[in-house]
Image 1 (cartoon, protein in one colour):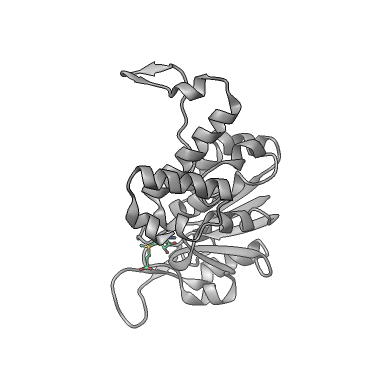
Image 2: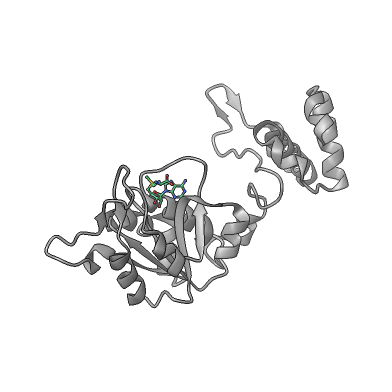
Length: 249
Ligand code: SAM
């Protein structure tokens, strides 16, 4: 997959692509990337890329022309162009899965009050919000989206690691432990040391159900759970006297 990022602040992007799992994915040839400073496409000695909004109001708006020239330089027409914005569609794991199927993605990083609307009309295929809050930059939002999707590209991480992750099913992930067995008077649950695979699987399923019930009960309400998952959930709800949640299921 090739990822192009259009930004006024390339220095915010590079560290992500030169660290950890992404660095390895690039070394293996699974991901490649370009960072384009679209100020380079602005006119004049000052290379001005933003201006005051028509109609008045606070802040500055990124101008259409430098962005459009930068987009044309990478032949963006007809390609999947993502613009992270608080007014976009909410980003989810299934959205990440959909984007991960593309061979090429282009990201436009907004800043200040955002970008001239005509760029969205002319080039953007996906306006995506990463949550109901306002960040100061599209660079961090783009990195969040890229981080969620590139790890789903074949070969970046093992498919086994992806299987039981939060949101890969309607349940959140179970708690994880590593050495030492005892830390600050807290022990790793005995079942994880037992070597008994069926008991470990059952414990993990119970923990996923409990975690989802406590942190995200909304996910359980529309979840299509198996008979076994349903039975165990009802048992947990009953045990915890969660009659309110029980009545919603
Ligand atoms: N004036 C805009 C509004 O009220 O919708 C907010 C602009 S924000 C200060 C600057 C940039 O940060 C946006 O253009 C967008 O690229 C990015 N951004 C901020 N919050 C975001 C969110 N929740 N999801 C995705 N991108 C976001």
